[in-house]
Length: 350
Image 1 (tube, one colour):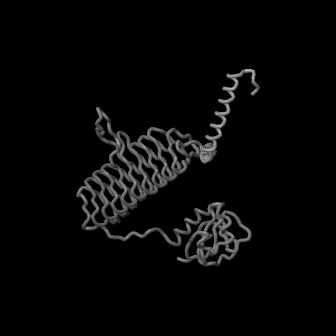
Image 2 (cartoon, one colour):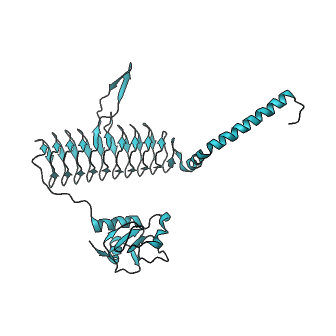
């Protein structure tokens, strides 16, 4: 699809500075964009690139001087870029296959209107699937599970018995929803499995990446809040609760019975211990190890995780520790010599 810059500005509620008749066919980064591409500036560290970009147009938050490309001024450039990407390219199209005769669907399962269920899908007893769902090959849906409307479930996803999936949920390939929690009672050196009687509840508009594992609760349910988005390879422990509109980057692990508030962000490889509470609007830096409660609105980093301002100062000193150690040893030696000298001859000047 092609649009003029003026048409795009009208679509996103922005305004054009420069030639509004420029034709835009696609989108790219500032460094790679060429004629017919639109790019965006949402991070000040890339501001220099706007002077040299070959993009057909650039989305910005304010007018910028000495830029040869026409500008589309929008309140939120990244959001405007997203809207334009959807307009020009759309989302992935899903082939309409109806209900494959090679899918195994229980007689007691209820399938909504306009669903497309591919080969080798297993839908167990008493499952409910809403309207407009796409279920790709190899998906397993366990007994009594419920799936809302307009969900997309990619190949080889396993949804265990009793789990509840909301509307417009996307679950990517090879993810497991509702496996048993890691719960054992150790007695006389033996680990005895504890039945996990909770389920997983995934609320509306959640997206789960590939190869994630979300455990069912031991006693209470594991809950993933509305609008939250997970990248790949994320593990959520039994009974954990993730609030609405959170972003979890790849390889985050949340231990059981931990509660995470709304609008939180966890960078890659963050580890969070069990039975703690993380407040709302918390940001956790990549590879942080969270071992204590975190109040609302904090930014933390490091292992153990501490407030970002303190952490930056503390961790910046690590490279100087060998030199500091040598200096401390020299001072210790000097102090020992002084003490020894005083003890041997108290009248001697130091």
